[in-house]
Image 1 (tube, rainbow, N blue to C red):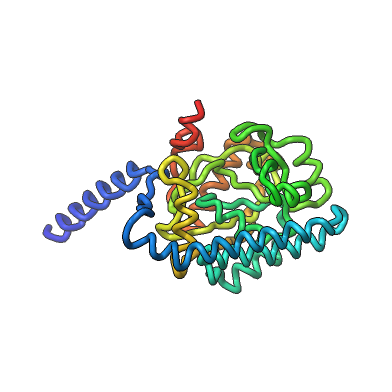
Image 2: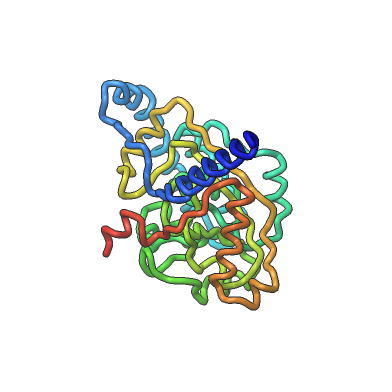
Length: 297
C-alpha cells in the first residue's frame, strides 16, 4: 500500500512539473546585458576596442579584395567568405567552434540543398558562412544596403522584399533547380536556443530533404527587443572567450505524408524531429509574438 501511495505521489508531482514546464513558454526572455559598468568598461577599453579596430581593418582588406572579384569566380568568393568569417568570429571572442567530428562529417556527406538553422544571434551568420561557404542565404533586404556585405550579397544572398514578408520566390526555386544550397533561418527572428518557434513556410514549400543545424551560445544569445544589438556586440568583443556549440542531426527525409499533406503537416513533422533530435522545447509562439515584430505593427 505504501509503494502504491509513493508511486501515485511521484506521478502527481511529475505531472505538475510537466505542466509547469509546458506553460513556461517564453523564448523571447533573455538576461539583460549591463554593459556600462565599472567591470565591463575596462574590458571593452583593453580588449574590445583593439578587436573592433582589427575587424575594421579586416573589412578594409576584404573591401580592396572585392575590387578584383569576378562574379563568375565563385570559388574565390567562397574561400574569402570562409576565412574572413572565421577571423571575425575570433575577434568576437569565439576562439573555438565546438562541433564534433561526427557532426562535421554529417555536413560534408549531406546531399540536402536546404539547410535549416535555429536563429539565436547575428553571430549565426558568421558561423553558417564559415561552415557553408558555398551556400546562399535568405536575407532581409536591408542587408543589401550595408557596404562590403552587399558586395558578397550579390552572389550569396536572396533578399526578401521586406523584413518580415515573402515566402518562397521564383528566384529561390530557380536556385534550387540549379543545385544551389540555401540556408534558411526558418523561425524568422532570434530567440532562446532552448526553444524552437513555429516555423515560416520558406524552407518547406519545395518539400525537399533538410539538414538541421543547431547553434547554442548557452546564456550568451541575443533577442531583438530585449537587448541592444550594438551593446551585445561590444560585450562579445570584450569577453576573453565566448562559447558556441554547433550540433547537426541526420538529414530530415521527406515522407509521403509530407509530400501529400498540407505544408503545416510538413512543418510540424520537421519541428518534432528537430526538437526531439536536439533535446530542445517546442514553443507555441512564432515570429509574430516577438517583441521586435510587435513594434513594427
